[in-house]
Image (cartoon, rainbow, N blue to C red; front, side):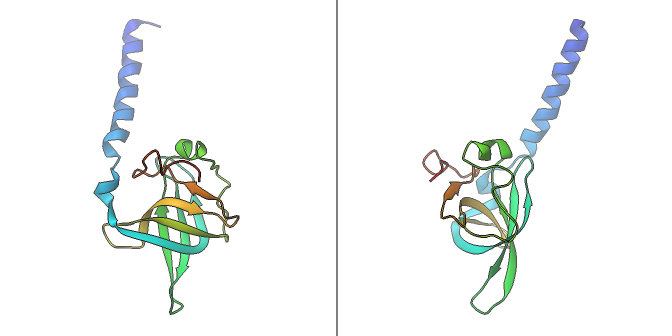
Length: 137
């Protein structure tokens, strides 16, 4: 392979990956750390894909109204290092999620931890994570 072709491939790779990094957001840009929540609900959908895994839960309030919340976690690779795989969350299972609400105030949050029906709590590789909160509990 010629040097010009190698250079072109490297330049293309850098251009592709730098666009992803540029588009990525920080926790503080989208979420309000002062709006912490702890919600329990049944899983309705799981999107296991890059750059963030999303899952959705139906949360019932004290009046019986059900709202579907979107929860963001880290990337699949980061989650695997914390005990997750694409089959950890199952449609219909009830989980408890702790995290921070989106600044928009909608039904969207950044999950910090998820407690599974077994009682096992897993860190979510959140963009807010610190080493002490990102490990499996």
